[in-house]
Length: 132
Image (cartoon, rainbow, N blue to C red; front, side):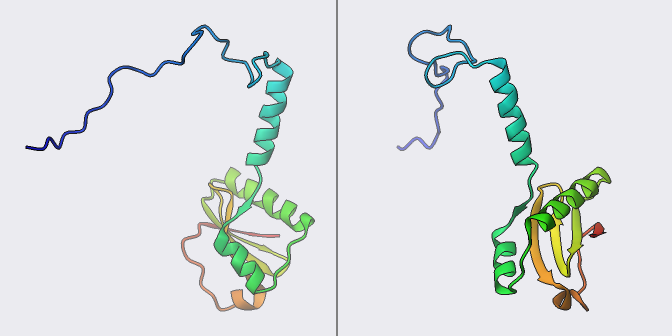
């Protein structure tokens, strides 16, 4: 008779070799300096602070031939930060005749449309709007 139970290993997995390895070593085995850790932390914070675009939003921008400059992206990113400070979760961001629905919590643009398409449109599931 087949046993339909799942058995899990009860012993924790341990690395082979020296168990007293310094936790702050890199791939080559040398110690990571405090300044390098701080630089990495700053770079990581900077990269995770950026706005991302969902595949759907990218497709909408392409199909509607909408262009966002680096300045526009900076303004939109700042607007999302301000909305987050006010406690927004889903926001409509309107910049240069482009309407973007943004997940503020995830810092992700969900969809995009031009101003003409945005007219006579009802935006649901948003709790804030930022007009730049």
